[in-house]
Image (cartoon, rainbow, N blue to C red; front, side, top):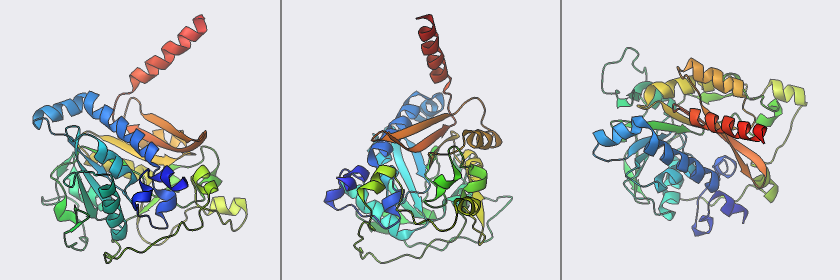
Length: 338
């Protein structure tokens, strides 16, 4: 039962690695976010113009940290005249293979999902601007090092490869970035700051691995894990020291959550960017990051509850949600008059 909270078709042979057990988006949440994407594409003026310009073809969405495929599969379920392509990116080649296998269990069309072995930060920085592919064009800041070539292959019927497989345009993007480990709640309610606490490594991809599937157990994960949507915690040090040292990575190059939002806003055509974030994300931090990226007006933050408990939140940037505010005010006014 617990496994099927993550994937309803788990018993058909879903593949997860150790990290995937506590990082994959539960299917019911992933499907809900996909429904929101479908609604955006079918109602937003920017996407209606896209549909007219592209002879009724659906949009292309980037899933920047696809992992074992939870959100990518949900996007793949959206009808192709709404979403025509899902670009699934991850630095872990073995995760891409698992995601492709998992997508096959849901019958996602083989031409709808492509799996790219690359760092999504590189793709945002150097491959797209305003939705158009620019890696093959002169740029003011060319990359010093190119990612290693990835030999294209077919796995579970899906194309898996490197940068040469990227589509010519990207319309919108979704990110479920690394949050900094399982101890993020030590920061307190509304204490997770996207600029200070989120660090995304800008590194080379992990090496390609063989097709051999290594059976993974559930890492000792109990029902309590699924109820709390976090891996088993092994606390070391005082609460104060854990809070002070949360995600204090010092080696390598990183971008923070603020920089991620800015890069994504510049990269995609519609400026519609969605992020899955910790439930204790600071709303002030999110608003500040959105302003720095050039967003104005309003944004939407949805809270996802499972079994009555808040699990994650999803931020939606780049569309106008004033109607929701107006509806809320109307309800308040009606309640007051009663």
